[in-house]
Length: 147
Image 1 (cartoon, rainbow, N blue to C red):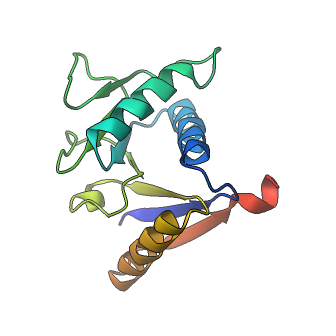
Image 2: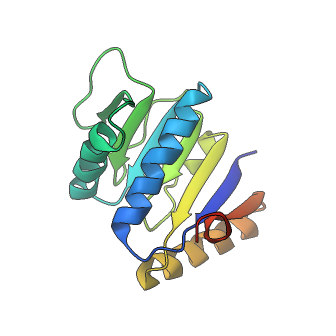
């Protein structure tokens, strides 16, 4: 069964959420897992693509957008809307406001919450949806470790 983790940030900005997502991707890659980053639209996919190139000068997260595939497929993919990645990816990093219909094909789902009202409202609904469907959900309060 898919395990769901919510990471709660103290920041209110989308930039903080994106920066945390890049750090989380780096951690996931170091554990030798493949990750798919799901976002709401093409503009956000472009932003994540750019951030993965720049977030750490001493690190590189091999990635591609689903709308610009390359071979061999790197361990990080980025998609939006109804774009579902190929099977075999371990982790879904869901930065979209809604839960994609195909989320249960992953071993883990990560959701990142910043203190912006639209994100808070959307992710509360996601939490309730996962719980109602019986998925194990854990929260990680990053506000305690990063004041």
